[in-house]
Image (cartoon, rainbow, N blue to C red):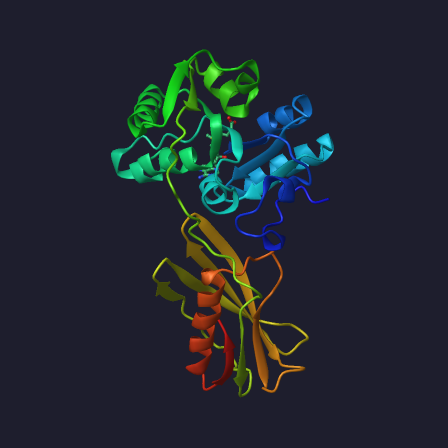
Length: 319
Ligand SMILES: C[S@@+](CC[C@H](N)C(=O)[O-])C[C@H]1O[C@@H](n2cnc3c(N)ncnc32)[C@H](O)[C@@H]1O
């Protein structure tokens, strides 16, 4: 069984039992860093379904090694934003607890939009938490702490209890770092206490089948390539580079699609079409487990357009 959340194989939204193959309280850690706290949860709370998200590739690699060694069946990792999981994957009133330990405070005013805790976060959380479910938040940053508690209370969905952080939270990498630096810690138990929950639909729809296009003509010789940026209503795609296949006829376009809280790195290949009634097939490679979304569709569209400027003609599109 994979330790990673199988997003290409899951419906959006998924069910807790669909992800973990059992019904159990669902607990999400956002920003697991090196995975120490997630490992503690998986080992000491075997009765929970533990899901972790982190946007940093290095964190995901470290946590993966740690959790693979731990060998627990009821833990899943996601390389990406926890907000994406809350918004698009986890159903309403399905999450029992969310842990956030030492989130980046983004202290400068001009970086405030990068902070995890925004008014919209508390609305979304209220929709996805079970009744009585909680966010457990720990930080060393007093202003961020106060601001977060104020945002939670202002939303009207929560009651807040302040206390020293739980012992396991004090074992994380950042807890150790800030303890050595002599910083104070602040911890809030932010508990949903209202039956009224906002309706917040998923923002990203998964589409059926991966996007592709058929083209006629010959594979162009590439002597130079300039980055292409393609905008669409909910995001944009960047085609970063194009590579020549070695020992095979074909090109691979390296692209990145940006949608709300979802960035996908994509490899889009142009190869002779073996079965289709056209010369060439442009398709998204499975490498990196891409999810078929508007972003992949727009990426294939952007590459197709670029190819038509190289004297290829489109003969069929699925995007
Ligand atoms: C300061 S570190 C704390 C790591 C860990 N919790 C600890 O206590 O050692 C913050 C972590 O949050 C991750 N992060 C930031 N924004 C995120 C988001 N929206 N979703 C998931 N992870 C996020 C960062 O990549 C980083 O690993």
